[in-house]
Amino acid sequence: MPEELQNKNVRPWSTEWYEIQKQTLGESACRQLGFYAIPDDMRLSVVIPVYNEEKTLRNLVDRVREVPIRKELILVNDCSRDLSREIMEELQAESEGDDFNRIRTFHHDVNQGKGAALRTGFSNVAGNIVIIQDADLEYDPSEYPRLLRPIVENKADVVYGSRFLGDQAHRVLYYWHSVGNQFLTFLSNCFTNLNLTDMETCYKVFRREVVDELTPKLVQNRFGFEPEITARMARRRYRIYEMSVSYSGRTYADGKHIGWKDGFKAIWCIVRFGLAD
Image 1 (tube, rainbow, N blue to C red):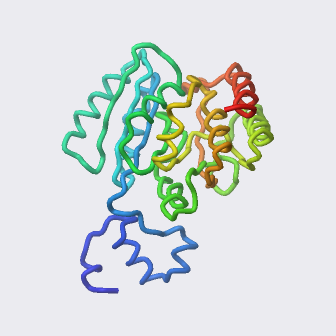
Image 2 (image 1 turned 180 degrees about the horizontal axis):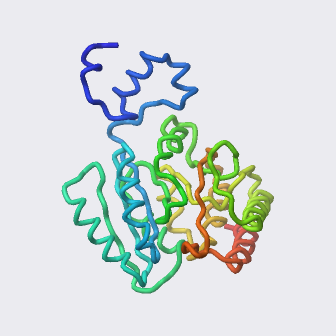
Image 3 (image 1 turned 90 degrees about the horizontal axis):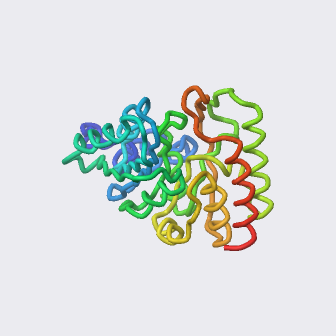
């Protein structure tokens, strides 16, 4: 290993960091371990819809900021009734001058739903790659590098983080919720001819060009966003990959928002957008 690389405090996932790993372990071992180089000039846009998340929001943002990738955090407050807006404004003020972790905030005056919040976020992204991050603590931001890899290596246009591929930690919770998720994924696959295992996942990663093309066409305001965007992507034949992710699901007592009515709306959206754009 070159002495100049040994003496540098290099950032994980950077080109220099990857060269160190490759020289130490070999290229084949690096590929098996998922080590690769994220371009130094790349910026990740993290779109975070927020609705009454005062208990977890700051913790979640701290975890996102810890990920060693240049990024912008786009927080969209969907008319929260708690202190979420105040926390968002504090976080934005704290980020002033931090180009590595920019924070930008947007606010809805009327509650519209997760889909509407995501459209607002998508319309304001500036990064090369875009990822959706819920404001709770169900999904772990430390998994971003794994999720970005197929796009950075130009194998994929979109990556879904699946909770059901089976090789990551998964909190044991509601059986009928998992059955419902699997049924919705199965039905979506019937209309899109994809073989996804988790259509309803939060973690969806996109090339910027995909977001720019699809955002003007999106119409679903609530959780119908998931089947809608999946159907629109399938129709355009984007290259879609799945990567396993861990999942620490929360209970309704913890503040979980989705309910059985959203499941019926998702079925309608699967059929509606599966049949026509």
